[in-house]
Length: 110
Length: 110
DNA sequence: TGGGGTAGTCATAAAAATTTGACTTATTGT
DNA sequence: ACAATAAGTCAAATTTTTATGACTACCCCA
Image (cartoon, rainbow over all chains, first blue to last red; front, side, top):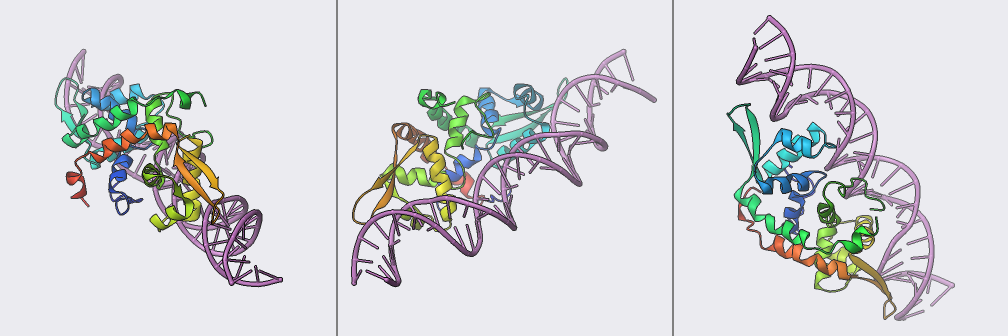
C-alpha cells in the first residue's frame, strides 16, 4: 500500500479507511493489537494458517497506513513488537460496531 | 462471493462481515443505498470510473451477502432498484464509525 | 564455534479481483 | 418497424493479492 492502487479517495475518502483494515489477515492482526502490543511470533502462533510472508505484508501495510507501529524491544530474547498508534486507536470503534452486528442470519447461511 | 475463497470465519467470524463491505466499489454503493433505494443507472453516473461489469459484480455480492435487495420496479421506464435489507441497515453503524474518524493525519500523506 | 530463537527477505507461482470490449434482452416511444 | 433506454451477460486479458519454498541477519548461550 505504498500508493494505493485502487484509490477510492476521489469518490469516497472515508471508505478508503475501511480498506486499510481489509485483506486476508489485517483485521485479525488489528484485533490482537487492540488487546496490547503483539510480537511477530505471537501472531504466527495465533494465525497458524498464515505464512510469514503474508503476515509481514499485512504488518507492513498496517504500518504504512499509520495504524500500527513497529518497535524493536532490546530485551531478553530480542524481539519486535507491534502496537496501535493514535490513529490505530481511532479505528477501534469500527470494530466495536462490527461486534455489535447480529450475526445469526448470516452465519446460518454457511 | 458464492463461497468465500478467503474464509476468515474460522479465525475471525466478525471480520468476515467487514469483508462483505469491501472491494473496489462495494463501500461506495453501500453508502448510496443508505440514502435510499438506488438504480443501476444512477450508480453508474455516480461512479463514472466503474464499469458495468464491476458494478454488477459488486451488486451481486452485496445481494448474496444479504445486504442489498434487488427489485424490478414496473413503472414509467421499467427499472431496477437496490435497497438495504434489514441486515444491511445493521451495517450502518460501521460506516458511522468510519465517518467519525479523524482523517487529517491520513489525508496529509496523499 | 555452533546451535537455536526471532524476525525477517527474495523470487517465483498460483489464485482472486478487476477491466475490456463486444454482445443480449426486454420494454417503450414515434 | 425502428431506435433508444435500462440493465444487464460473456469470454478474455490484465492487475492485484496471496502462497510457496529457499535463503538471510542478528543476537544469545554453552
